[in-house]
Amino acid sequence: MISRRDLLGAAAVASAAACAATESTAKSAAKIEPSVLISMLPKDLSFEQRFRLAVDVGFHLMEVRTVETDAEAQQIKDGADAAGLRIHSVMNQAHWRNPISSPDPAVVDQSVAGMEASLRQAELYGAETVLLVPAVVQQDTTYEQAWERSQHVIRERILPVAEQTGVVVALEEVWNKFLLTPRDFVQYIDEFNHPLIKAYFDVGNLVHYGVPEHWIEAIGGKRMAKVHLKDYSRKDGFTPLGEGTVDWEAVRAAFDSIGYEGAATVELPGGDREYLADVRDRVRNLLGA
Image 1 (tube, rainbow, N blue to C red):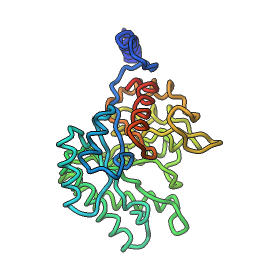
Image 2 (image 1 turned 135 degrees about the horizontal axis):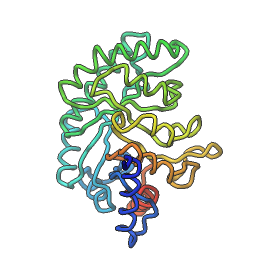
Image 3 (image 1 turned 30 degrees about the horizontal axis):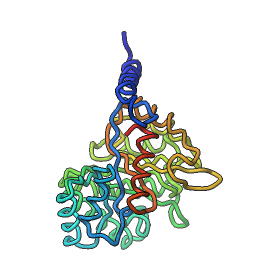
């Protein structure tokens, strides 16, 4: 009997043969779609001009950040529609300054309001996910309190809005002293037992204390909603893609092993056309995407 791993391996070989004439060095089985973060695009251009530039250099998907007004959100949507650039995800902005794990009800209220705005904007754009940092361990919040408080707020106040909009709440692992192992990350997600709670996995964020491909395999395809691409070196910190210590071949193989097919958003400093084209080439060479 042929195993799923064998089938994926065969698909990778076939894909490599079909792409032999390209510059890509990666073996590709599952389809990963490259995406750009809106903050990477030149701010001296109009929204439509920025988005046309993204498409010109080879990005057809974009992640945006939560904005202050409905009018600005509409401008972003109109510009993206005109440029043919699809907005697939919204990065919530309220969770660091006002974590939902805070013991202060006023802080939690502000954080929930920020998530509600993010979910409504995602619905406007037709985006599938909103990125949420679920908790922050700090002086007034232990690991256990962060777990319990954040799960309660997500269940009682955020999930009802997610259900109204049909948008996935994608939880990201960051340097917040929380969910520090893949076991904890998976358990935290699974305890919700809800199809609108999934993982937003950042390749570079965990290199300092983990191995990306191990996390990918532990999270699995059913939980993995979206991916961020960054590189990292324990010596130099965050680096350009391909210049850190991430084993990109192993990362690509791990994505293949779980059958991940979806967006991978580059989260790097911004730059001009030449810089963005170079970033796009790096994604292609590292992941075959």
